[in-house]
Image (cartoon, rainbow, N blue to C red; front, side, top):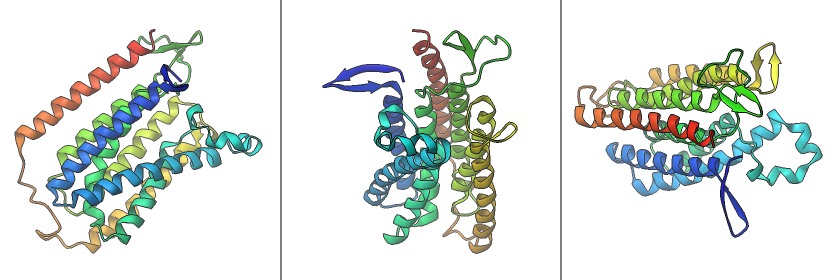
Length: 281
């Protein structure tokens, strides 16, 4: 990992900083969307913080069980060494979602409206956090100018590929959020969109393979998409298209949308520039 500095014997890494920035940005977006939807700010703030913890636990457990089980079986103490890396974003998604839906049901929080408020926030946090990741892609077959040189090899910058795709998905969700046909639609779009993003990126990364070029992360992506399609169909049938459950698709604030588009476009450019700068040092 890229180490930035040390405080009291603790090493501060770039990935940790970008994850923290992503969490802060995501929480801000989530609270803004929650307020627009009339959700209780204190409740969704608590939900967001607890879900982050559950997501980290899910990310670690999934990585241990699905990606490197034999190593952790021989070195059980390493399970708790999060500073050494080893987190699965799909595990975080599964663990965080399972906890969040349980928590919302227990505390009587509107489930699908809240999920829609969380979706843009989650993908924005993922986009920002991915910029600091140090898991590079596979070696390039040709010397493309955007490659990153690591250990005398020119590698695909898989992190920035995923960050860009996630920024684009955020814009799709953000511009769609006021014209949904049923509660939960934005969250369903997020699950499918991110799974597609990750499926594509997996062709440029090295992970445990299942068959041929198909990795275990490919399998997770397909399973998530299939499960999401089933839930989408169920939600469409369950919810009545009334004013109480569906927002007015004609209510748009053009200034806010254009401002958001500009900010995310600028963030994307800054992220790319920062990524190549930090890896050129």
